[in-house]
Length: 177
Image (tube, rainbow, N blue to C red; front, top):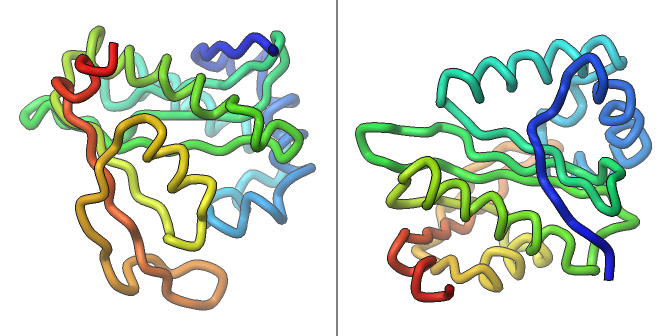
């Protein structure tokens, strides 16, 4: 079984590899992620990773690269962190050749440990289109509860998509341990 780990990006070191991965799988990633079309170069990616690093330092988010056997394979993040409500939203993407191998689940377990134990969050939310079956399965395998579905909540690829809303509370996560 492959080793899966997460770590913050080092923009100047990681930008070229992250950009190459996004560019290689851009068509697949763009099915579910509007923002993935933006980085058009390693320099764009480095600037974006710098913004993420600043957000990490300020406690507004927790962006992490996913590594499989030491190689960058994707990204997972906590964003929209609210200290007042002790909550955040989660997002993630993974290179096609790692999909279906349990990589995202293992990476997200590490991110959720960070969210609930180190950041002291009470609630983490996850949203995905019902048609994004793999993402829905990741949420459910981690113990997220389906809390509802928003109709026509996201404009992507020339159409509106419904959005499934999942939530996970700290006490639910701790019961899994």
